[in-house]
Each structure stands twice: as structure tokens, then as C-alpha cells.
Length: 269
Image (cartoon, rainbow, N blue to C red; front, top):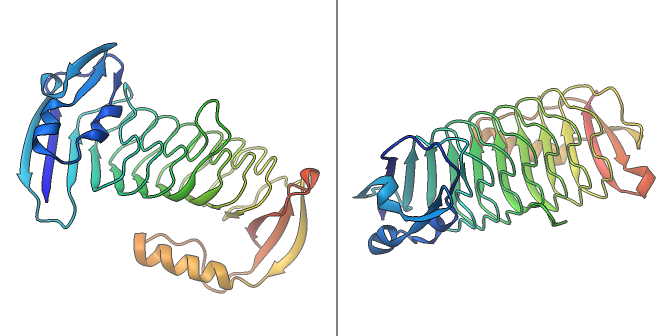
């Protein structure tokens, strides 16, 4: 296994499209032949980054990138193998259409994190902006598998058109979360903005904090939390994250009733 480390040779001040960086396949020759778009010009990777290649003692190949910023988009596009570590903030479309593997970001990311991903795992240490786990612009199919964990806040339209997979947000979320949700599991630990689950058809949303309005949802009443106990154990053991206290009473709502939806929102009593 190999470890590839990239460090910019200068501060990235213009738009950079890193989509082609997913094509290197951890091949020493291919990485040097890779070209990316910077300031609307196709440039060889080694003209922009210092490239270091070492043997990796881990069981997976690893790509580590330092000193990116919000100008750096499409990193991890269709990512399918190995570990991608980002030692900074990063731009939009991180892990979009991701198939497998793991992506870790030490800072924040911009819009469309994990959009239309179908597998793999993305963990963001800080915040994201709009449309995490959603469909890409012009499409109706959102995240269809995999896992996204956001340890900070997420802004608007989290999980827009989500079909499958798990979204976990440890901080606050903005408005229109889980808009037009088809299926999947979304866990929201803190404050939730307006119009949660608008147009929801199926799936499960877990809310740890009280929410002021669920007018398009019907209250069913208190439920047993056996499924969430299993989910809770998984997150505690895998990530050190707790959804709720064991045995904590939960209230179930279903909807969006305006569309005859059968989705469920689970709220702490």
C-alpha cells in the first residue's frame, strides 16, 4: 500500500477543479500524469502541488492533502478506493457521486458534500453549507447509500432528495432539511430550522431537540426504541457518538401527510 501526500506550492486563490484527482488509482506514474483545472487552465498536478509518495503501513492506500480552501472543488468525485484525508478546509462537491472508501476533513466544507453518493463514508470535523447528501443541480436523486457525519453545523437543504444512507449532524441544521426525502436515516442532534421533512415520502428522521412545528405530520404517540437502540450502539462503538440515552422515551410522527407520505420523525419526549 502507498501513501501520497500533496502540498500546494503556492496559496490557491482561483477556482480549482480537482475532479481528475480521483483517477490516479494510487499509481505512481498516473499521479504525475494527472491534470487538473486551475483558473480555467488544464495544468499538471506537479506544477501546483509538491508530491510525496511513501510506503503505507495501513491496510489501505491513502491520499493526504494539505492547505486547500473554499476555492478547491470536486475533491473525491466518484471516490471508490482507499482513504482521502484533507488537512484543511475544502470547497464544494466533496465526495459527490462517491462509491466506496473513506473521506476525512479536518476543517469545513462548502456546498453539496456527498451529493448523490452511493457508498463509502465522509466525516467532516467542522461545518458544511447547503445541500449535503442531496441531489446535484438539475437532478432528483440524492444520496443513495453510505454515511456522512458532520461534527459541526449544516446549513440549508440537508438531505434534499435523499434515498438511502445515513446522515448524522452533531450541530445545528438550517431550513428545509430532508426536503422531498424518499428514504434513509437522518439524525439531528441540536437546533433544527424551518420546514423539516417538507414533501417527505419515507425514511426516518431522529431529532434530539424539541421542534416548534410539525404541522404536516401526525403524532402517533410514544414508541419502543429497539431499532434506535441498535443504531445507537453502532454509532457509540464506531464513532463515539450517542443518539440518545438508553431507555429514553420517544414520540413518533408520520407524514408528510399532505402528500400521503409514510416517513417518520422520532422526537425525544
